[in-house]
Each structure stands twice: as structure tokens, then as C-alpha cells.
Length: 265
Image (cartoon, rainbow, N blue to C red; front, side):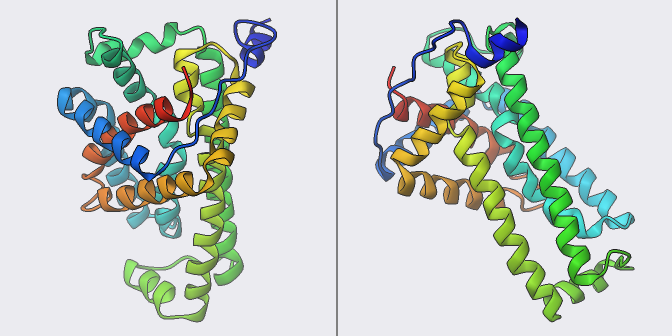
């Protein structure tokens, strides 16, 4: 029965939410409101997202000392694939502030009491699987171009191979192309699904379908949103991922407000 509830939510015939058509101006408003939420409780938001620069630095240190150096960029890029799940606490903070409820760092843990926690966990697991498949794919692309037994002896050798060889340019083109497809899949299934589940117990399939419908109804605007997210994450990764302590909270809060503009109450 628990598995069934994850699929259908509170009822066996959950209603499909109505999807609005939005434009670039709506993205701007969502970002402004997201930044306003960040200013309202920055210490809480930074605390929640501190794991990003810490993990980034640890991954970088690990990659620089072990033969997984070729996976450093895929690992960093994978943050975007896990972002919708990692930001769920930020969605909850924005939801509570919007509803006039008290907001603190410990209020985020109220998510575990949500009727939709099973569906949220299921979607989170799906994103984890996509992330692992991305890493395996990135490793396969590198192995196909440089040899599966090849491992650069130093950072200098790795940089030389990537930027100054034909195989390296192929790696950049193919890797970014494939990575774009993974990011597109995650954007399509998660752009509004997690916020929807926080507010309504509709089940994972309905939430994913609503997210897909939102993208299909607003292909250009959602493509622009994806570019904005990618650009801000790239900027936030410098230096040493520390900028993500600001970028991630703002994007997380903005995603809640984007959901509000896309999905009718």
C-alpha cells in the first residue's frame, strides 16, 4: 500500500494541475523573489547549501590525488543533476515564508512529515540513478577516446591532453553534448515536481507529468531557465565552489516561485 501511495498520492484519481504559459519576465520575477527569500534568512540558506562547496573541495582534492581526475568535471557538473533534490529544503523555506509560517533551519526537517515524503524520496532516488549513469557515461566517453587503462600522471598532463589534442577536443564536444541531454532530462522531470509534491500529495507520476507538461507548454522559457541555472552554477563554482553558497540558495528559492508562476493554484 505504501508503494501504491507513492504512485497515486492521497487519492486513486489525483487531479492534474493546470499549467500556465509564462515568459522571460516571469523568470526575472522568480529570481527577484528568490533573492528576496535569500536575504530574509541568508544564514539558514547558506547553512543548508554549505555542503556544496565542502563536497566540491573534497571531490577536487580526491581527484587531484587519485586516478579519477578525468571525472572531476563530470562530478562538478553532476551538482546540477542533484540540485532539484538538494534544494528541497529551500523550497520548504520559501513555502513557509509565503504562507506566513515561522521559518528556521530546523523547520526544514518538517519535510520528513510530509504525506508526499515517499514520492519525494522516490524522485530523489531517480535523480541519484541519473547522476550515477552520467558518471558512468562520462567515464566511458573518456575511456573510448583515451583508452580504458589510461590515467593521466599529473594535472598538467591531463590539461595538455584535454585542450591540446584532437581526442581532448572530441571529449569536450561529445561530453558536453551528452551532458546537455542528461541536464535536459532532469530539467524536464523535476522543474516543478518537487515543489508540487511539497504542497500537494499527488504522487510521483503526476508530479513528473506536471513537470513535463510545464516544459512542453513553455519550451523557450524553460530552455532559458536551464541556461540561467547552468550559467549561475558555473559562476558559483568559482572560486573552489564557494560561490555556490549564494547561488544555490537563490536558485532554490527562485525555483519555488517559478513553480508558483507555472502551476495554477
